[in-house]
Length: 259
Image (tube, rainbow, N blue to C red; front, top):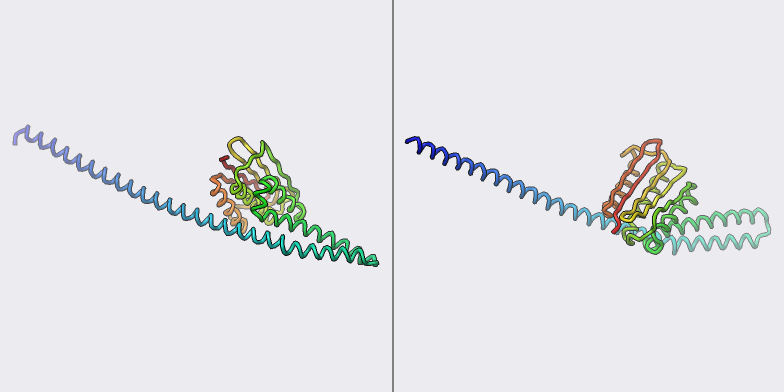
């Protein structure tokens, strides 16, 4: 074999080797793309399945809330109103001072209980929340906490109020309600402030309390509450941030885009 043939054979061998390497690389790239596509498809299916589960869970929860709301309004509320009327009659018909005083005191306490139950009934009912709007629904829930729990609460609204849709407002309200429930149950705050900041392109919600605070994962029930809030924030395609330290209270922030 002369030198020209040797050079040609070397070039040909090199080209064949490069083509082989290129084939292997292209095969690996195609294989990785297929794996990535399958993984992405699997993740999408899992996310869709999880979203359906979350949606079903929220629907069942709302149905339960609606049932309890109607039960409180139609049965318990009416029974307590009858008892209140009977106490009123006892107070007016009795001539004994002690009985009159006890009946009057019991009547006032029962009136407060009926008022608190009505507030609970309203805030459990998605229909009331849709009709009242987010601001009034939050104020109603704070009214109950002030009356029943003795916690100082206030609502600060900034910007021009607008509707983000009944379903989205219901999800936002449930997040606020969960945050309030966690604060009252676990943190023992003296003050809670709710902020609703209506910006031109987004709504920012804040829930601040000066309670005991917590370490992440330290309280099981509170952790479940945070998961419930995160689930709803995910449904809203919003961003939920929770900041808390023992002895420094808790600050919860939800930001969602206006649609």
